[in-house]
Image (tube, rainbow, N blue to C red; front, side, top):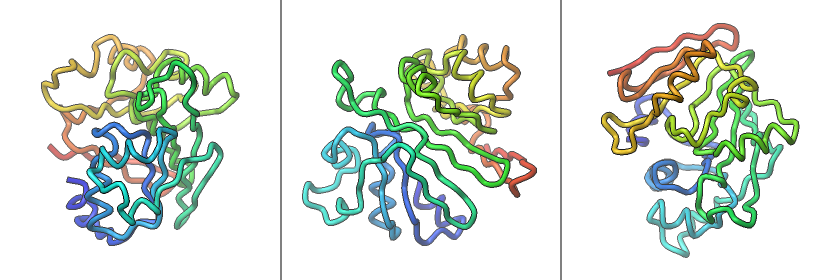
Amino acid sequence: MDVPYLLHYGVLKLDGVFLSHAHEDHAAGCGSILRKIPVAQVITADEGILDYVRSMKLGDNDPLLHKFHTARQGERMTVDGVTIEVLFAPPLQEGDNKTGNEASNVYRVSYGKASFLFTGDLTKEKEAQLLAEGINPASSVLKIGHHGSDTSSSPEFLQAVKPQFGVFCVGADNSFGHPKPAVVQRFKEQGIKTLRTDENGAVVFYTDGERMRVETYQ
């Protein structure tokens, strides 16, 4: 799905791929991209290269692995006026699952006044750590953490992000019951407009840095 989508929009090369963590539902598609489209670099979380090798079904000595590097908090890249920030890159700590959601990096993509926050499967505990470090995650659009699981999206974190839109990336009738009704209600109570890929199909935002519009494709 990833490669046809990129080619549909005329994307023939990539300056970087930013991965939140190594779980297959977040990283596996990068393997196909690397095989089909030139990529300058792949930015990862702190789990170690072998977890990404397994997710992407690459060989242990694949030359593509030279493109990988672990994100450094505060790192940023600007391409054609679009800035990608590594807002939060938590090192794995004692008690964390080695390839767990706790490792998720947080990225913010900004263009003018529009900004998009990607948190992977970041847990409530790590959301609290991000805020405790004095990081301001305010963004126009939030890709909702962990597919709307109740392990993410604490009220305090949503109040800090203050998004206009939230997007639940979930499969229809998924076995996990995502998004959780309590989380959906939490967004409603905070006045955040939400969209869901299981109900709205693909969700695409367009912005000139001042105004923003969203289109869905079912």
